[in-house]
Amino acid sequence: TTTPPATEAAAAAEEPFGYPYADLFPDAFPDVGFTMRKDAFIEYLAERKMTYRTNNAKDVLFIDTPGTPFTSAIVSFNSNVGPILTEFEVRFADEAQAKAYAAEKYPLPAPLYQGHEPEFSASDPGSSYRAKAWQFQNKVFLVATMANTRWANQ
Image 1: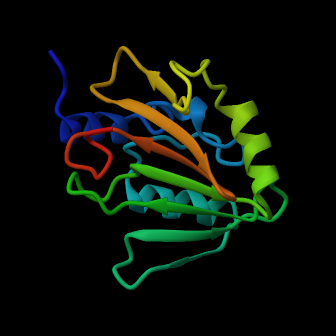
Image 2: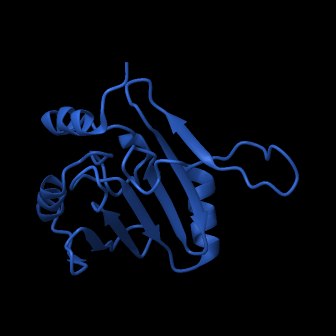
């Protein structure tokens, strides 16, 4: 049996450092993972004196990240699952830095066939969804393929 995402999110919220796929998140964000509630993440940023801005809907956070290999991070809490973390993006000064980071943090398998770019994908036996990561231009994305998110069919 698989646990429904809302139940999975509630279970993760009860155990603050037991978030699914936490090891895949940038080292500058220890103890963060998918299903972390938005209010808990904002508290996390405040404890670390990290500054951020939001969009008008207040469901996407734009985080300043001095002292990290990237220039900023964008965290989304805007899925139909509720205000939980389902997407994490880090931006770099240039594409070469993004490629180097992605290659080190998310090693890719060999291409399945010519012209097909492989993607990083991870499974957690205790989770009903996978994590995926990829690099595009000067950005690296890490997403949950959780039901009721824009990445559900990935």
